[in-house]
Amino acid sequence: MVNARQAARKAIESTYEGICSIVEYGDILDEQTKITSQGEITVLEDQPCRLSFETISAANQTDTVANISQKTKLFLPPEVTVESGSKIIVTQNGITTEYAASGEPAVYFSHQEIMLELFRGWA
Image (tube, helix red, strand yellow):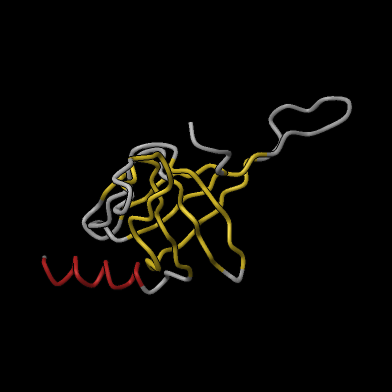
């Protein structure tokens, strides 16, 4: 059973085509002035990952537009911790995009899946 799980994890990780950085917003202490301020804190860099896209066809057709949405899912190793609301900067296929983790990850023995949305700023 352990060998099968290791093989499954290796197979999933072989599909990782991108890298990501995980950024959280929190307290930053200036060592010189000892003043604490709020800002972005990079908690992980250059983590291998994979983006998966699913296009949802037009649900609301109006006279002028058809609404088409896209779901974006990030695949990471299971031991990586990503807080809900974190900014995730992903580079895959030469394109870098900033996303926000939109919820709690689905964690499996071989990987985790996190639904993403485009990053629009800190809440």
